[in-house]
Image (tube, rainbow, N blue to C red; front, side, top):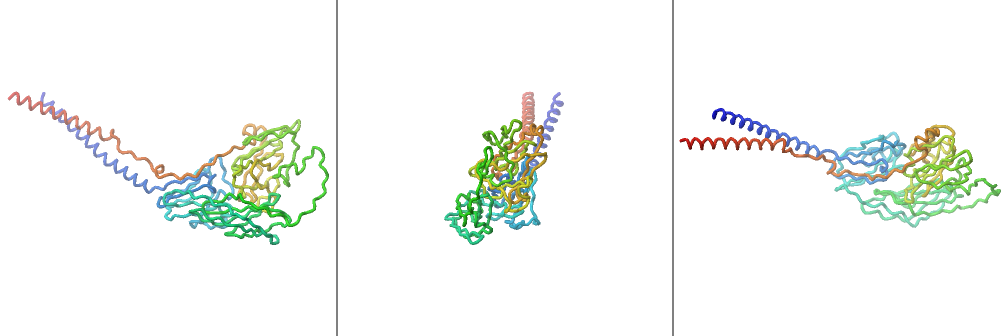
Length: 469
């Protein structure tokens, strides 16, 4: 019996040693795999994601020496349109800062768009634009040693002075100091006449000459400072009065119940609109379609679109029902670009071309009546900025009343702005876990237990043998 017991103990002992050995052999293999994965992660490019809505206004920062993948995310419910949906990077030699569609550029689509992958090695500010150059859309990405950027935007120019020179206006001003860590790249001059028509010019310094002005009109001049850290607010303005005043034309007193030009909102003056006498004007609620009685048999659609959503939100209206379209502009909105102008080629108000001389509306702060019309047939009606659909474009979608009831006719929803986010190295790297105790330590525990049993057994046998002797 003792020999059988000895053989059994020896077998268990040998089995435990084999199992433990297998466990210890697995440990260095797993450790090598984890080490290799950690090394690979150190060289893996960090993803920096910019939301499409922040592409031309957000702050984008990369860190020197860290490989980066720059991605622009376009939401699934957004249709990228116009020149603002294209990117080239003159700051690193990918295209030039000119209006050249033949140059290579990226056209954004829905989802994650990989714009550029590189390892930045030099601190600085790098220009990127749409395919039309910085005259339409531009911004900078910033490369710093620590991946942080907190430089302020520049101040507006002051002491604005304007002199007429025939059809030109010479604009002089006091240039502001550049913010610490930024460089002033130029100045944009915007002159707006009483009809909302804008004339623009740009220059590197004061003075700047603005061409093609009308001496018989007064203009409001706005000057914006452009810098690598962004654009100034353009809050300082000066009015240049007309050189001559025209004789007021004789007009007849308006008849009762007729809507006069003076009674219309200033933004609608001179537009080709289909006006309707409204018996009662409802309170306007942002983001909803209000209806009020126009006659005993018809209703009116009041559409309110937020300025931030103007070129990307889906706008649906009912066929055969008069429409009043408003755009709501916040007090602090940036109205310095062509995206703050509207014409509607789909209704014959302007054409789909880059023509600043065509009649168009220039938006101002507040709820602004843009257009009144009655859609007579289903389909899509194009509207653009003054530069045409090559820069900004959207559509009214005209549907039958039954379809509109299912889709929420005319309503526009506000889209919250999302700040550009650079992923930190901690969030970019995957977490690594060491080997689990269930894989290796159990083998050692069993080995120790088996060894202990063997030692006790041998010790007891020796003791029994000694006692027998």
